[in-house]
Length: 144
Image (tube, rainbow, N blue to C red; front, side, top):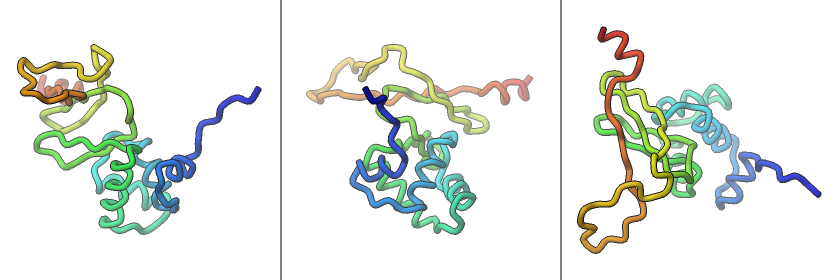
């Protein structure tokens, strides 16, 4: 009996119907290893891995990867869009009001939607996007 193997990044890209390039592999790995990176942070990580990449190429790639479901785009109010590799589960985010740090937090209910509106107005609700705001531990220490 064969043990199942985790697919390579290139296999995941192919499986999503995307062309495999060194830049896309580096970008997906950068997002997955990063911590809710913005486009500038992703570009820096890709450049560390493969050399030059334009910001336009990063924007195009994260759009394709988001559309394919390989990365998730989040947009905390007042912040640039950020991207994460944690997809396919029902989790939310903690955002620091002071420094903008973002951390994942599992949903207390565990299945979507974790919140139901009082009146769904006829919508079929399949997801609730929850953002918790406050001060991160570092900013709390600095405030004391």
